[in-house]
Length: 433
Ligand SMILES: [Zn+2]
Image (cartoon, rainbow, N blue to C red):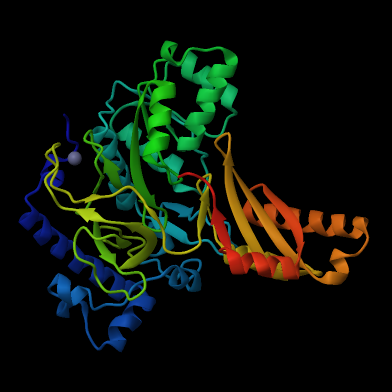
């Protein structure tokens, strides 16, 4: 089985740790010299990067959080001047202040290389025709996969967000062998094939690389059985790079973390203390090679565990378990991160409704639906139908506008909502992920 960068992917662990320390040192220097946010952290602790010579010392530095990124919007954490930035992406959060992430020429080179690693790990080769059915935009998914696929020399089709029928036509006529999309889109394709009376076996599709939303082993099985393909998982965080942080090999028993570029830690999300290897906790990542946007000890909010045991594929890189859940209430729908506080903010701006709500996420026919129950003051609730309808429409369009997603809205009496919130959480995710 081919390995894209054997030198790094199969490196003895001791050598790898040495390389990590060296790269960490230059990351710390870059952050200290060029990012005032990080310089202040060092100055407050009265240390300079040279004082950190071991991983244990490094772990005394505070975490970087999503809030820190927001406070430094848009360019506050950039470590290079804009003229050295050749690409800008943002996180997919549906919020007013997304995180703006810059890439230098070298960052883009590393990015495509790391995506090439997991494509290669999934046995995708230059003979493949790769249909990228992610939306091309500020979101990192499409561009990341696209560049990696070109890097390995495959034929790339930027099918983007064309409608399903057209995607199927492309698949048939251009003989796509690999589908890159969200796992739910793969299932929508399977449904459409059935509807159109097309036997999936008549397609050339043999593999799928799925991401952009959490998915389970069960979904993997369904996709594989219905499309007659092998489905692979990969992991990315748009604040750090997007896809290309970790990916599955043929063993499909965890995702190899590209540790020579990202230093992983697992912490107890409550106390922040490091957890022993193998125990599930929040994944914390430090960039080791990023030039434009170095992040130190970034709390990803994703819950997973790490496994150092040797893998049958020969790679020595640690494996992370497929994502289990999130630390916070962020809901990932169609690759977009929905932050509940954002909904609260929208509601506060609308007269007549209160910033009290409950979110229920369901999945019907592989499409995720968000329903928001909003508390309204009693006089509105008992007011005439027409007024209620106007308010409902106002909330709905404000939410759709701000979230970029379709949302169902239900008006409820404050008392009823409060009773509901006593019985259940603010965010209920009923999808079987
Ligand atoms: Zn492996």
